[in-house]
Length: 98
Image 1 (cartoon, rainbow, N blue to C red):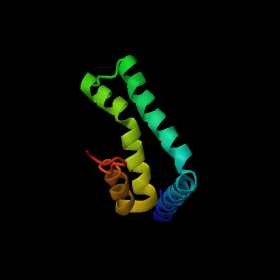
Image 2: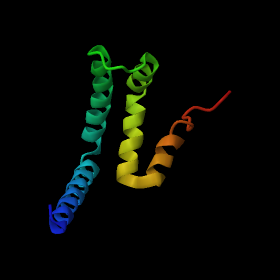
Image 3: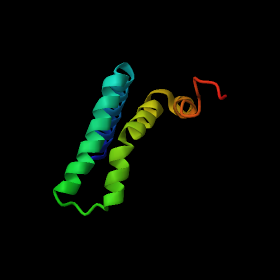
Image 4: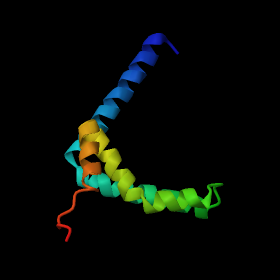
């Protein structure tokens, strides 16, 4: 393979990555649900079909797949500031302590 063919292939990968990020930025809710369900069912089906995954890993990823998806989508769309905003929401309470 020539050097120019390798360079054009790596350029194509960059374009595909850019268009995927653009689509995710424009459809964050769909991307969140799609990634969360794909992550959960992918790990679960891999375990059921006999892939050598330890059960605690399957449990952890299945239970926390919405959180993993939310942090991933936030990182792709807004960077570190968006991730900090998502994590700050875990400690923000809407009720006052008595």
